[in-house]
Image 1 (cartoon, helix red, strand yellow):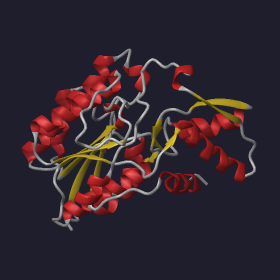
Image 2 (image 1 turned 30 degrees about the vertical axis):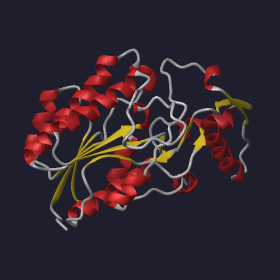
Image 3 (image 1 turned 90 degrees about the vertical axis):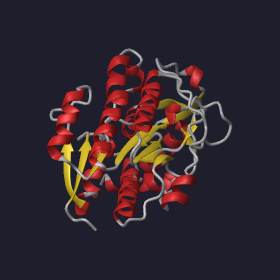
Length: 293
């Protein structure tokens, strides 16, 4: 194990970055660059920071993740989600080091009846998904050693996400209408960080799987409605009053960006090639909620 491993992490306050900062310090030195030091919309700054720090590994944990907002600011979304990852890949390849990058279920249109595999053709419905797919393509075009990890429905105890919004609304409102026809796997940022650590350890031990694109989500599936129900159940166990939930179709809750109805990702390839797997979504949710107290 190289105890002098220098890991550059882009993004400081994001959900996955915060969890990485808790789980990776024992692997080496973390260089965590927030927007003040590393503006992903500024290509020169990206190159300069990588060349200054000369890390052994780059983890791109920053992204433009405001799905609806991206519809009205496509230039910014593409600068951060598409152009920046390509530049990070170029710099990583020049240094001869790996790049770990996170992508999304939103690269697919959700029309497939079964879970998506890495072999399925992406067809994003909105600007966010289009920009993330362009980022994947930019990294792939550069080549080198990279892992693109597609995940879904990310939540944690920090930032803006479905879990925190629901915990608040369930206690504020008497009645909530929640979309029930979008199916996926809520994935805790802590689990993503744990898996990322396991992947780094395999690479460090000289036993990496093939580089490339992989799916990384919690096991199992549910709807946003089912996810909200699970959160409500936990609050009730704590003796808190909870809103009544009503399932609705996506058509009853229009948003600026269209969402895929099927966000399920088949993660068996990561398990087979890298021996890394995720917990069931409700187990990870329980662990995340337990840590809030």
